[in-house]
Image 1 (tube, rainbow, N blue to C red):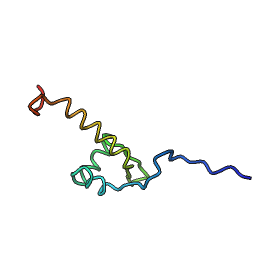
Image 2: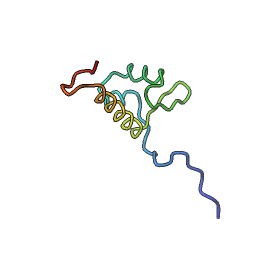
Image 3: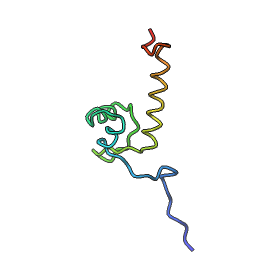
Image 4: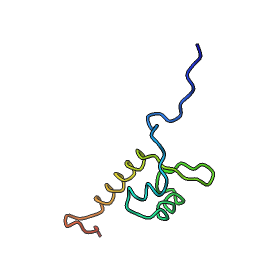
Length: 81
């Protein structure tokens, strides 16, 4: 009886997304997604020159962005100064 092969995906075993798919989720252009990736501002998996994204990480990142954005606004919804 052999041991099962090691798994490195943990609970995040869904399909990886492309920049185009992420751009549709966040409502921005693929170029913007690539720019965020290059700057390390969005969770990215890099395979050589290819970049891919996990839906779970993108959704968690969006929640963080929304929390930061909401925290930086006043009661009227305007940017806090």
